Length: 339
Image (tube, helix red, strand yellow):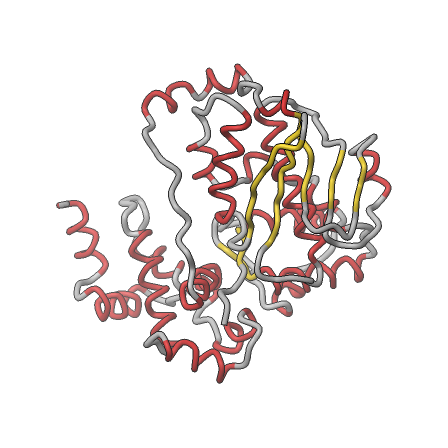
C-alpha cells in the first residue's frame, strides 16, 4: 500500500477562502468528506489530498463555481508557502537558486509533489507534477495550485505581476474566462505529459528584489541553515502525519483512517501489523509526538497541549504521556530545560 498523499492545510484554505467570500456554508461538507474542520488554526498540518479533491468537486457543483481550482489559486501567495522554504531561501542571490530550493522542498507543500526544471533554448521549463497517482480524478484543482505556487515564487522574487506565456496541464478542462484575463497572451495546453510553465532564462538569472534582500539581510548573515531533506514516508508515517490534523477533534476513528488510505479497515489493520503496529498504538504514538513537540515551547500550557492532541482533561493526557515517556509531561518539560 502506497503512502497517503498529503498537502499542507494552508492550500485547502485557498479553497475555503473562496467559499467564505460567496457565503457558502461548508463545515458540514468538510465533515462528510472526512476532512479536519479546524483548518485556520493549523495551516502547517496536513490533510489527505484525495478526500479534499472530492470535497472540491462537490462544492464546485453545489455552488456552481466556474473553475474552482483557478478561483482558489488566486488566493495563493508566497507567504502561504512553507516557512522552512521561505526562511532557507532568503539569502540566495538569484531566482534560479531560489527555485532550486523550492524544488528540494516542494514535498513540504504536497508529499507527492516533484518540482524540477530543464533548459529549453532561451527558456527554462518548470515542471510541477504529482507522482504516484496517474490519471488522478480532480487533478485540475491541484494543478492550478501547483502552477500558482511557482508563479508566486517568481513574482515575489524578481517580477511582481509577471505571468507565463505558456502553461501546460495534464488535465483536460476548460478554464474560466477570468483565467484567460489573468494570463493575457498565455498559451494554454491541455492533456499534456506534464504540468509546467515556461520562464525566460533572462528572468531566472535575475537577483532577488533588492528591497527583499535588504529586509532579510540580518537573517542571511546569521543563518547557516541547509535545506532539510524531506524524509521518505512509508505508509504508517504518512498516516501519522495525516492524523495529526484530526487530533484536536478527539480520537480519530479507524474508519476515517481507512477512508484516507482508500482501503478497508481490515486491510489497514493488516498493513499496520506488517510494521508491528496496531491502529490504537499508531494513534498513541502520533499523540505523543505532537505533544512532545509542543512541550518544547515553555509558553504553551499543559492543558492546551492536552486539548491539541484530543484529551478532555490534563489527567488523562498525563497518564497516556507517561505510558510512552515514563515521565509526566511536566517532568518531560523540566528535563528539556536541563539539556
